Length: 229
Image 1 (tube, helix red, strand yellow):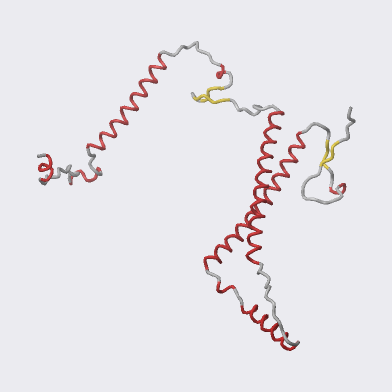
Image 2: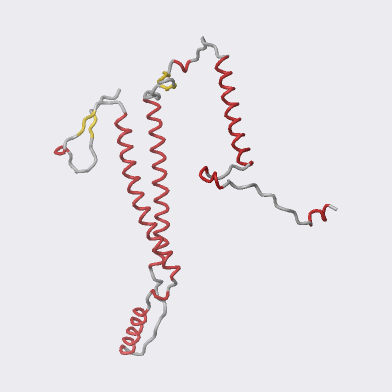
């Protein structure tokens, strides 16, 4: 019986639209829209009631240590700036980890560049012709040589499929991008290594341009010699 009941066509009950006199107020809110709006409203209402209850039972003499490290600005708790959060030893350790990460990236990029270069080098270089020709005299040898040269000059890359050409061009672009990335990483590694050395104890001074033997764009420092025990 249930199958027959479902086979009988039923009338689709549609909700009424906004009357003509109320068109200026926009679309008429349907019941499903009201249900969503009511759930959101009651959820916010319950949250406010819980916060009010929590505030009413709060102990005015309550103390916790974060009160020392924060202050209230316009009724909002603002934590104090943590400029000296880490000690010098901890900062030096973080610098070493950063330098190690940069060095690992440089080594990885160089390996990829070497792999790409070897692959493209094999594509560009033609295989040597090991075919041996025999001639009766010098005149025949010159003819064979000229015929081989004409054959080599007639071989062009027009017969290469466009898919291979696009892939090769893409590989060359990737190779150039990786080389530029390695240059940037090398520069960053040099700057970070210099900052790490400057953090170490000891008197040092920056050399003037006339004191530098090999001119460079990077600043050069000289440490004062110390007697080792």
